[in-house]
Image 1 (cartoon, rainbow, N blue to C red):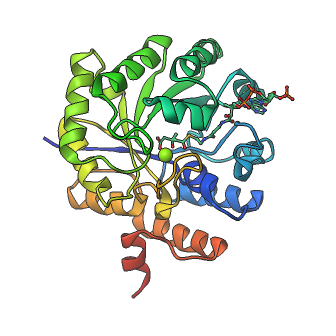
Image 2: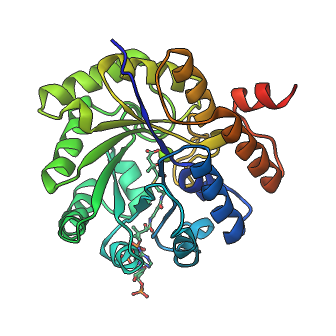
Length: 298
Ligand code: HMG
Ligand code: MG
């Protein structure tokens, strides 16, 4: 059966804004995150402590993060290495996320490392984060396909998931970075992960909507028992290091489906939609979310 409640891991301010051509003023980002929290989102990924040359859109992490001290939500941040972890911990971050790849090509494109090297970099990052009392999420990108390699063997995905879990990650997020997954594939991966000893309650799903499959994939994951779903307000997003990646599953589209199914989220859809309409004005282009468009064009 379906779960009674789903925790939405909101990624618009990070996965969304990291892909914007124009740079969004730090004050606007802070306001966006504050509005997301006011709309009832309890986990809001705030930014990334990555190399500023690699992701200039998030180069203001040091300025932004302290502006959020009054926001009543968990505010995880991405860290790609020990330098990133140092920067995050220095500002008091309590939740960090490392991001590995299931494919060799994307490890190179995104982290400038081989898949093995990237996992080696993360071992002390996760250990030190845990020692500091932080919650650690482990992202795995390209779980369902890679733009350079095509199919990614499911046991390779499971091996990366298991490696991150063995390091001490509290939770995993299965990334469909380029949005090619379909529901049967989602169920197959979840089954394999369970067989490998990864419990469903430690697994989140992270779908991009390139092929319009994100909601169907989410439904498949819910049926399997997954209760953590990543989404991006207004459907912002993509990934600068993966060609053909479009925005994430829109949070509004997700909430529309979940509430329709009688699944609690704690989110006020009206306030969330108003936030995405406001953000679209800041960005100077309409939200790609179907639900935002339907609810805002009366
Ligand atoms: P590199 O160039 O190989 O780094 O980049 P390096 O270790 O060789 O260091 C070079 C210089 O960078 C050094 O400075 C370091 O100090 C500095 P120097 O000594 O030469 O003066 N440096 C840093 N500075 C600030 N913060 C840091 C940092 N690290 C090194 N953290 C690196 C390697 C990993 C840093 C780079 O490739 C990088 O920043 N990559 C981030 C890419 C990224 O953010 N991608 C998007 C997020 S992933 C995603 O979107 C997918 C996801 O949504 C899930 C899905 O959809 O699948 C999560
Ligand atoms: Mg993503």
